[in-house]
Image 1 (cartoon, chains in turn blue, yellow):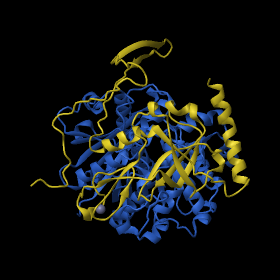
Image 2: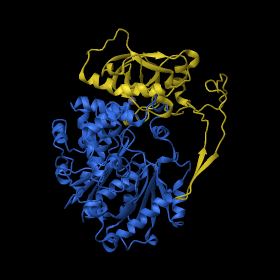
Image 3: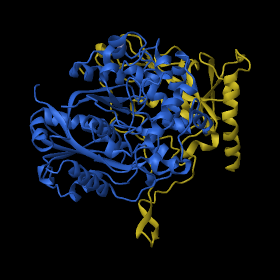
Length: 420
Length: 219
Ligand SMILES: [Zn+2]
């Protein structure tokens, strides 16, 4: 297992709703921007393509990756598409990681997108809800914010948290997005607000599902992203100043229905009876621990070792639940961890300086890739030129964490990236 | 001898009780069709309107007992004969890897349960907007190892509580479709909120007010 896998480069399109560019146009743009950072990288270098796309419902096109692949001129190359709900991007990166790690390929492209602006917002919510168990959940009027709210409310009560505690994550990520010109928040509502959000703004926004309000929820988006996953040898030779190393990669799973994790035998055995219940993200804990182990990070020291993180803040509450799953805090010090703003730029683990899903947007297939690219920008020091200022740049970062998350915590991946 | 864990596949199914169009009349599939277009002459952007609809035939197969049970106003769950775990929604094979796909047995469940967690929905999918705001509760039915999600009605949303006992209430028989929308939860008979007004309840009321207004404006 000595062969190292790297992210040699990558780029993200703007995320927006609506936005007028085709999937193949988005991926072409992202590749061209990647070549701006890695001039040595040419289309002829690609050996294998992993496409990252969640729902064919949005385009009413089965196998849309065939359209993109063909358009890019890559006919003849092997290609697959990975679909894994909100963790589609993370799972595609995981697939590319395996492909390079195995020694079969040196240069693998990961291209992801979603076109959620093809339908109305409420229709979009219903499409996404089709990834919950349609027989038992979507029919009962459930959509993801509702399932997450039911989990968040119990978590909030058990940890004696308040709506304001969750709101801090919403405020942080949106306000960081204001420093990133590609984010949906910057391109949209921020332009109207022209000021930073406050906790009151979040508390005053309309209820989506108690305790979550509109600004506690991520955005529905169109957007694309590309990541170039290569062997260390290729990266050293062709992207010496841009690449980062994937030192840890974990992927885990949980039940499709959140109500089925009160006594699941596999979790009972691994983490003790009654875990994760409907409050903890077991697949996040598990995949995080796998990634930490691979990267040689002690769980208790994780928050000290990780200098910057891009995590899946589909909801402000889930960001907080992820802090716990990743061992950054536990039940005893969670309140302090949140209220001391340990995930803000000046805190122990600056989290989502790129804006996260609440600020950048969440075009599902592109999201996990976006998180990885945003994390990379700190480890290779390009953040100041990618963002509007250095306010959202974590200086001297050595280690980064990337998290991608699906369903009601049904599939979750975690990656540890390091500066070479 | 056939392995007793195998699910039987019937050779021939003839539907002697047929209600294919009971609820929305004769739904016609119109297939894929382009409905119109827009053009922006300044940016030269073009867009078309595409409509597509489809009718699905969901075969309940091994879980048919669940669907037929809903029509008859019954709750059918399953139980593993090896470890005794009880499931609702039903699992037709045990979830315990040690039990190696043991086939579960059908059991009739009591139509009562305990609220494990809940939320007040103020937004939902297109087909549920007019019901807002509603309480979606995850309920452990009759001592099962799992919780099932459904609406909790006949309660002011802010009065719902963790651990409250609930009962099952059914739609009139001729309106049932064999799906989870045939029934909902209501507070168990005689249940009263255990706490009076709290700041949190006030906050919930405040958050619900505009939702009630908005739904009214939809008519
Ligand atoms: Zn069993």
